Length: 129
Image 1 (spheres, rainbow, N blue to C red):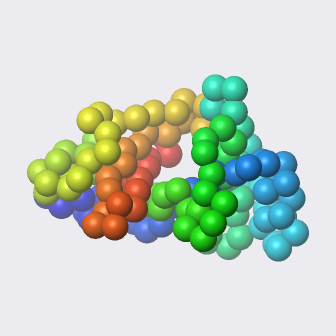
Image 2: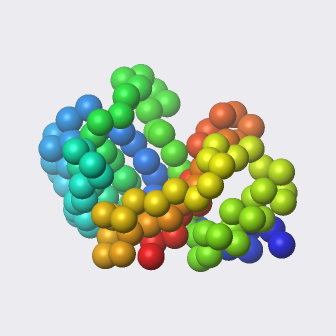
């Protein structure tokens, strides 16, 4: 069992936003469509899509106003439970000790976990329920 058995490609790129409305307007101006707008507690999160590229952008977290502002790369995961078990078995650098969930995203929520790559980059394994 390997974590790669449970991923099908990039799901989205995560970029925190200083001003979500301005960020949405910017991505729309360069051809993206708003695929979803969700609440996560008191904050909002937008998914902007152009072809097969989806950018998740949200308010409420610190941003990096310099180059390197991308927060995470999310991989589309077919079975987050099996992927999590495989990641543990492979000895990957887990950020989360258990699978996380956000029930307000998409129709039925998401389940995900994060690992760190060799450059401290965050890679999310996410299953849309």
